[in-house]
Image 1 (cartoon, rainbow, N blue to C red):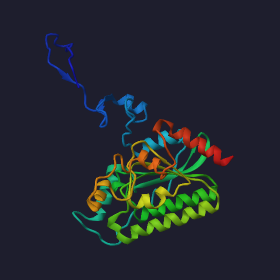
Image 2 (image 1 turned 90 degrees about the vertical axis):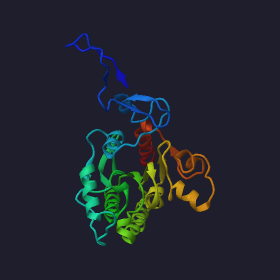
Image 3 (image 1 turned 90 degrees about the horizontal axis):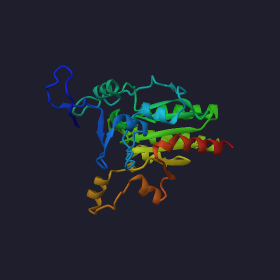
Image 4 (image 1 turned 180 degrees about the vertical axis):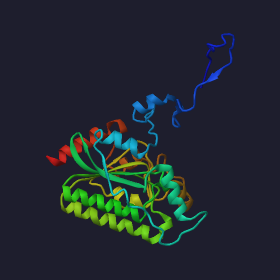
Length: 279
């Protein structure tokens, strides 16, 4: 986007001046040019086609929870490197890089807060932290968050965004699927609601475990949700997949998610569900 402005210092100058970087963005779905302030006010979704941009943990906390109600817990829990894993660089280097990039110690940020005054235990996955992958630390943080839900008798809500299990921890990562599923059985026995919000993307071991085990499963519009990615599936079965395969709307039609909710309605929907289950 180029604006033509006359310089106050040199009224004769007709040299075009570009807008500063970061004021505008283009919707990857409909190519609409959006003023970033407008995008933020519309909950980071396109005002023309409702395409949902990927956002981070801080944005989801602001959108879902009451202002200044979130209190983080167990932020000290971090991944170790029990296998001394090394590919193009060491696992330790990857963890340190992810911490520096995101400001978080792990791919799952947990805590307590309120939604329209109702107390909840809430977890938010950070896709920027090694693809939101689930290792031993993520499994432990999820377990402890669920225990808070049990001890305080409050609903558990987790916003999922993940590429799956963390390969650098091999079988230790896969064991978290059983660990997280087991604690959710305790929540079920205690009749405490567990609500999942599946965002783009939610795949792999997270989908196969706590991502799809919610009493109520909500998906954001257009979110990619599945175990293996569509490209891998097509290469395996040697067939073309249906349009919008593994997208939120497709899964809703097939009964894999309970509702597809636009981000602007997410807090009010969660509030209604919480009020309903508590009454």
